Structures are given as structure tokens and as C-alpha cells.
Image (cartoon, rainbow, N blue to C red; front, side, top):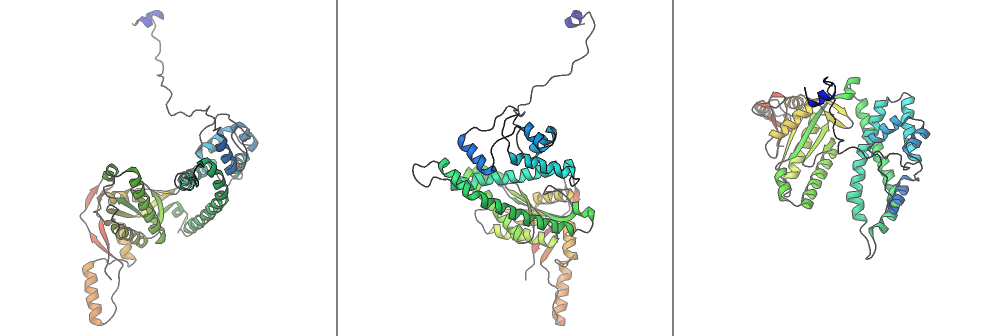
Length: 382
């Protein structure tokens, strides 16, 4: 029996649950919004309204619970602000609209939160890019003696309506394209779990480059890589899913489009002396789509194929190779294609033409996916 037990009449006390220190990343609920005069003026200009409400007042005015308002607010990517008077009429209207969609039965509450989260994440990245890369360069003082703050306000005032209109235009265009793809799905299940070709393009030796290049040089290389990939993917009918610095993930509705994009990427970047070698892996199959991203075994397989692909080469899985053969874009066998071409020439007719060539590689185990047989994809000579 311990001394503590003795002090308690000899009876052992039940163990108390352990206590843990407050995590260092806990949100500071007393944090106040900026009181910088220029920051406030810019906020009023961009939001088009003055600060009027605390979060509690905004929730009450919108007719929603504080709990739901907080969920929406955090989902959009904004920090808790305690009960600071920092919200505007626009914040109240946004809460009212989201809650109204739930009340009308058009969206479930979890779906409304997901809408807030996906919109917040997408626009946060866009806003950061515009400030860091676009506005920062444009707000360089045009005359000696002028401060950047003296230039920022009138510039934002001029750009804001134009950028807003352009954002809405692009969003509507993308929404129309996405809706068109969904309604053409074969059945309801395919609207969520669809058969797609998924490709990863990866710069070889990027980690070594990060140690050798200056930060500015590295940033320029990554920007050039992402820009080139985005342009080529879009131009040839694919969709850029996301960029990860030295890697891009794209998807296409059919195998031929994905294959063409992969070869175009290799061909374009191999002629750029500033770029490292590139390798691409593509897989074809069922893919789950969520919030603009793609998930599933097909995506994992494409990633694994990329990691084992040779420099400046494209590896594809058996399903994509089979699909290219089925659609007549690659021969089932190069030997049979050569025999058919010889017969056609002898008979004076046109032989079948193919866009791509496929060469089977050695089967190999792939972590988490078992044994796969990759195929080396190339462009057939014309």
C-alpha cells in the first residue's frame, strides 16, 4: 500500500484518466480580425460590405443554429474568430442559402458541408495564387516614392469586377462540361464510379534538383512543368486532376486520349533542355470521384506504374492495352500487324493503320496490388 493509500484510510482509489496538454495547434477563439486600416478598406472593397455581425448574430439573422453555422464556416476554410464583430451581410446570405438548400431537401446537411468545403478549398488556392503571383507583381510601385499600399487599393478596385466575371464564366463552362460527362454515363452507378483512364506524369530526379537549384529557379521549373502539362492535357481532351510539384495527375474518358496525352508530354518535355526526364504511368478501370479528385485501385496502379517506368517512357496496365486493341488504336500483335501489312501490299489494298504500339514487359510484383504485366507504350511510325 502506498503512502497515498494510507492517507485515504488504506483503501486504494480508482485510477484517474490521464490528462493531456492542450495541442499546440488548437484554434485561438479569441483571435481578432485585422485592424490595419488598409486591410479593412481592402476587405470592405472586396466583400462589398462593412463588418456588422458577430458569428452568433450572423447565425441568428440567417436563421440557422450556431453549430451549423460553425460547420459551414470551417468547411469554407475560415478560422474561428470567437465573437468578434467581423461578418457582413454577405456572410449571412451565404449561410441562409446553404441552410435553405438543406431545408428544401435539395441537399443533405453533409452534402451542403461538402459543397462549402470543396468551394472553399478551390477558391482558397486560386486567391493565394492571384495574390502571390499576380497582384504582387502588378503592385510594384510605378514611381519612386510610392508605396505598394498606395497602389494596391485602386488596382484591386479596377481588377475585381473583371476577375469576378471571368471566374463565373470559367466556372459555368467547367460545370457545363462536367454535367455533360455525367449525363452521358451508362447508368446511375457510373455517375460516381466511372471507368476512366488515369495517368501520372512524374519528373525524374526531382529530389536531387531541390538540393541543387535555388528556390527561385526551382519555382520557375515547377511552374513551367505544371503549365506545359495543364495545356497539353486540356488541348487533347483530358482533365487535369491535380498537380503535386514534380507530378501531375490527369484523367481521360477513353484510353486513346490518355495515351496520346502521355506521349505528347514525353515528346514536348524531352525537347526542353531545362527539364529533367519524364516518366508516365497509365491505368484504365473503375474510378471513384469525390470533390474533383479520383480514388481507387486504378489510380494506385497508375501511380505504381509511374514509379517503375523508364526515363522518357510510358507504361500502361493490361486493361488499357486491351482497350487500345479493342478500339483499333493499337495492334494485338506487332508480328500479326506486319503480316497483315505485307498481305495488303501484295493484294494492292490499304492495310490497317494504328496510332500506338504496345510492347509487353516482364511481369513484376507491385506493392499492394500483386503481380502486374506492364506494357510499354510508343507511337507507331507513320
